[in-house]
Image (cartoon, rainbow, N blue to C red; front, side):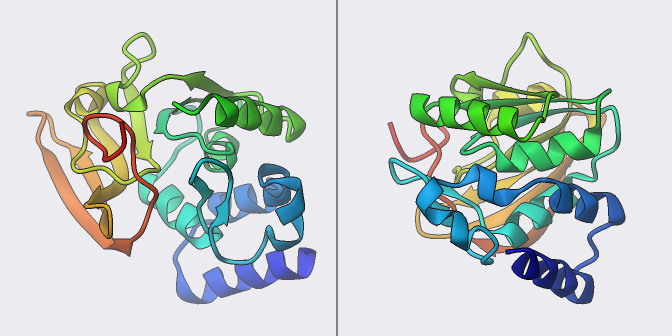
Length: 214
């Protein structure tokens, strides 16, 4: 397993511009702790793995691309839509550090419990997982420095953009059910977004009015 992990890191160093803090965060969080027990031997294969109710844990390279796009800094507050098994939040939590905070939302109760258990096992103490519709954001915790969406959405939810700080960054897959573009938006002072497009991806669908599942 460690060999596979090292192989991934070497691959990224050759093909991507991930920084040292991002690589160290990945190296310090055991992905095998965030997958179902029967899938542990496959934890460091560079592919998504099934969780439950049609949801997946994203492939490691996708997790790192999204993490890098956020341009995280120590001490920041980050909101995540779609906790899944908690792995992406754990990586973010490592980078923002003890003075930072990650608030992650998840609508599937079994995944809320799974993510909380995984984060506890991994001793990640600065991530909270809430059972809620993340598309609405979380007003009581806003504003956020960064926002990440880990499920396919039709557009960035308006409520999230309102809860993002000026000059803050939002990253997520936008499109239809069959294909999405990874979009990075930086919020201008006037509330509009400067957009950057990071390539085609395929994510499981978001629930609610900005997604595809009820």
